[in-house]
Length: 82
Image (cartoon, rainbow, N blue to C red; front, side):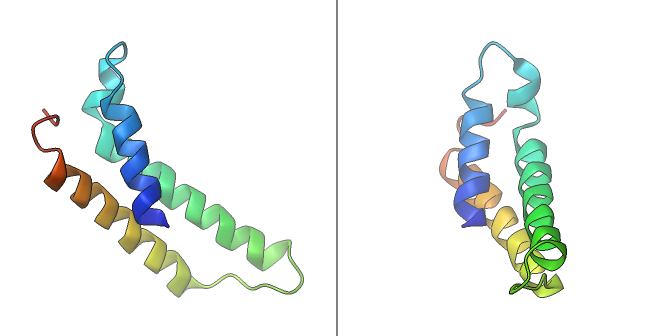
């Protein structure tokens, strides 16, 4: 899921021609936003939900998926990355 999320965030940032800052920092934005999102979900599971528990290994798996999505985007669309 996080591979697809970071891949789509990268695609959205790279396609921003009006804002060069988004295009230039697409990988950084994709990684930071996906990891923050995953961390917030784990905190929500730990402290808000009664029947769920947050787990560090889930967060680690989310991070691996995030980096995989960014790597995959760079591998497939390397001609669009400056």
